[in-house]
Image (cartoon, rainbow, N blue to C red):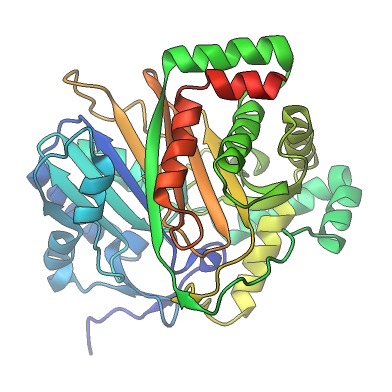
Length: 409
C-alpha cells in the first residue's frame, strides 16, 4: 500500500495551454505571507486533486498530486518573499524575480505591499488567475477555485446552440482562418522573449473617447484602441500584418445559467480577418465573432483535439525571424477579483499582467481598465521587434494627440 496519488492527465480544455504561463503583479496591496501560506496549505488538504495541489509534468502533460506529508513543502515553494518593487520599474522587478520552477502550478512572490504571481496556463485563464491571486492575498475564498468547469459543460452548450448557430458554426469549422504564413528572413536563432508596459492616464483616455465620439461614433473604445495600437506599431517600424488579429473571447456567457463558478480555461483566441487601420472594420469583425458565438465551437474543437492528441510541445528555443508579425489584442474592462484586492491608498494602483511571448511571429498587447488609468503590456520577441521600439509605440498610445490627428486625417 502507498499514499502516493496517481498522476492525472491535464484536462482537454487545458492541454492546448501547456508550456504557457501568465504573470500578474499587483501593488500597493496589504499582504500577510503567513496567512497566504496557511490559506494555500488548507486548500491543498481539502482539495488534494486540484491542479493547485499538484506539480505539473509538462513533458507528459500530467498533474502529479502532492502527498499529504509533502504539502507544506509544496506551499513553501509556491509562496516566497522579496522586497517591495520600485513603482517606476515594475518590468525590472518582474525580471529579477520571475524564475519559477516549471513544475509549480502557481508561484507567488510576496513583498510588504505587492504580490507577483506566475501561473501555469494549464491551471486557468486570466479570469481564474486574478480570482486566485485575490483569494490568496486576502487569505479567503480559495475553496471555490476547486470547482473547475468540465468539458461536458462546453459540449452541452455547443449542442444547445446548434439550433441558432448551426450554419455559422459549420461555416467556421470548414473555413477556419489563420494569419498569412510569414516568410523566414534568417536562419534559426535563439529566441529572445521580452515584455514591457505603459500606463494610459485618464486624461488621455478622455481624449481618445472624445475622438471616438467625433470620428467613430458608435464604435467601441476597444476597436479604436486596436486600430491605434496597429498604427502606433507600424509607424515605429514594426512589420505588422495589417489584415487581421488574434482576439481572445471569453465563453462563460455562452455556457448557460449555473450556480457554480466558472473557473478554468474558458477563453478562446480567434483569428479575425479585418482591416486593422479602420476601427469600424475591427468593430464589425469583433461583432460578428460575438454574435455568431464561434468561440464556443472553436473551444470545443480545441478540447477534442487536445483529448486525443499527443502532449503539445513547447515553443522552439531556435526559430528564424519572420518577415511579419501578427497582433494579438486583448482588452478587458475588468477581471473577477480585481476590485476586491486588498488595495492600499498609498500610491497609484498598478495591475501589470501579461503572458510571456510564445514565439517570434506575434506581438501580444493586453489592456485592462482600472479606476485610475488603463494598463498596457506587450510581449514579443526581441529578435524581431526591439523592446525600445515597443516602448515608443506604447508611449504614443499614452500621449495620443499626434496619433489621433494622424488617424483623423
